[in-house]
Image 1 (spheres, rainbow, N blue to C red):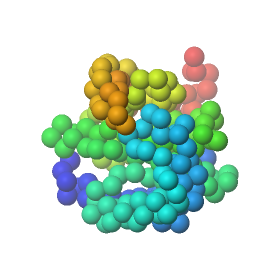
Image 2: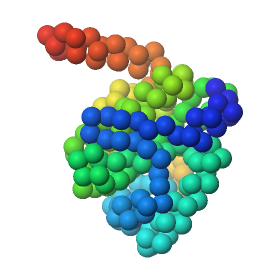
Image 3: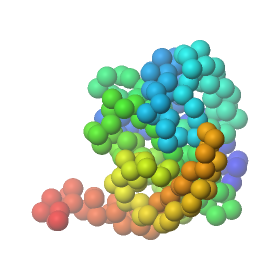
Length: 206
């Protein structure tokens, strides 16, 4: 994997589909839906960015994102709920390690849509894209201390806890402890093979 390959993929970011979600390019007209969750302190508590002060700020951010897409330097999908048509969050890659063929996943979801298994569904699709389309060897995700729901998402998609980094980041005037989970390509493929076998033969489910 190299930067040219990443550019070719994400400068024309493809649409991904799951049973309940469409993952597509973020658009400027997502501003109202994004602001609806980005303005909330309970959403940004464990994130690196602050609450959006108004919808104009959100719109400016989405305009910036369009330029990043064009440069192949933005790796996030809008998560759209098929049942409502609302853009309910984002999911994608925060960064790539070209030399080591690895990527890191990040995500956020509107609180009204938590507890329905939607974010694990989105993350699983992005993870599939990472391993099968980008041919990554390793995918990581991190969460701040206290954000237990985020860790549960990671575990639901097959990631394993790898460790904690005490006071690793200075964010919003405080040092925050961060933990990491990860999954390797071979582990992902083994899980995928088991799931497909269970679909063909339901009696195999434990």
